[in-house]
Amino acid sequence: MLVDIFSTFDDHNFVFMSAYLLLWGMTLIILILFNMTYWVMPNSWSFFLNTPKSIISSQVIRSFGKNLGGFRNILAAIFL
Image: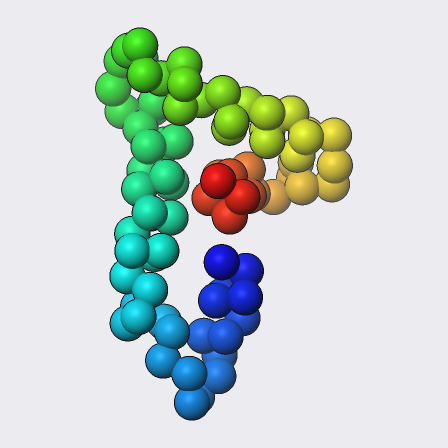
């Protein structure tokens, strides 16, 4: 996915929201599911959905990314 992000700046490459709709859709779904814990009460699935996010969050807190807002969710969407 990281290659697709940088290829969107190429004028002759129509990757952005055209050929990889599933890739962009899954990324948005992951971001929405991770942020849904603020909207609804947790259920049995929230443990399984928040486990990868908590692992990524613990690694981000140890680095310099803890001062960037939304950095945890961006990393979770890229690497999941």
